[in-house]
Image (tube, rainbow, N blue to C red; front, top):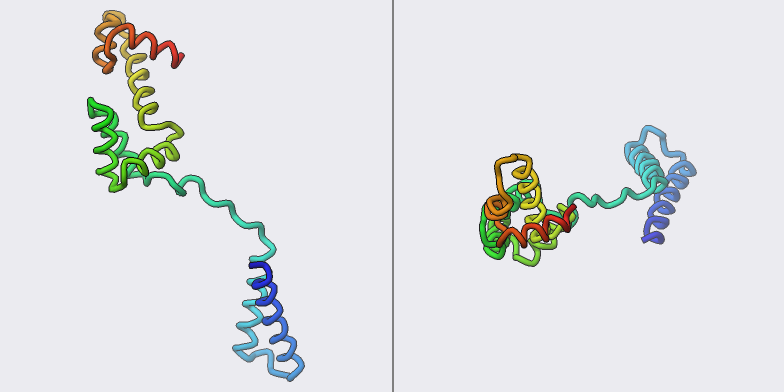
Length: 154
């Protein structure tokens, strides 16, 4: 790659030197274009390469992430939720799981569990609710399961 770039720069520079030696007029369009190309090449080559955007590489598109979050939030069965979210995003289940984690930093399973705990935290702020009711409403098997999961997230 580097040798190719050096070859391009040498070829452009050589052309310009020959043009000057042949006394070609400076208003020659070919001469002008080659000079501009060499100048652009030197400016581009001197800049550090831009890092690849982490936001898009391997991640879900914004619309896919929105659809996925809807499915993961609204489906009762986690396996079905992941399967339907992957279908709705037009990707395989394994690709969906990798892309979802790249997009959110969490696996679909962990993201969903975190959402359930957040919902439970909101419901706990209402004084007239029992732990059993909150556990059931947030999709936990029972109060003990809810308490174990909740304490891991604190």
